[in-house]
Length: 175
Image: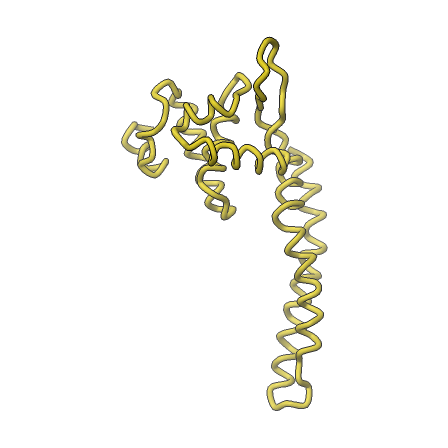
């Protein structure tokens, strides 16, 4: 990938980055920025995970801000979110009191964390809303049949998702 194409892939935000990043690291960052966008996650989360994923050594918050050229607050928030999801592991670095992290590379753990933190809460909240939707159907109204059909349809979607998620979790465990 040429430098120009790489800069376009990363969205032209290469200016604030550390020149010491290797081409592999820059490509990894671009890949995970793209993945973050697909999952509706902040760009900085993709950048941070891409940096950790492509770094052989554990990194500290200060190293993340220096390499990526992002604010300390943005880096801290991104690291906290990635840790909570299980995408980063804290590691001890002998002789250094700062927190250091490495990327989790198990797809099973990454998928489980994402589903647990981003999907499951919405599905749980949706169950209550689904019940309210069913109760809101006005069977006596002219459009009652339409409303009941739509409520039943979305209920079938929820049942399908409920059956599909365990399969997705099991498949992710194979990687």
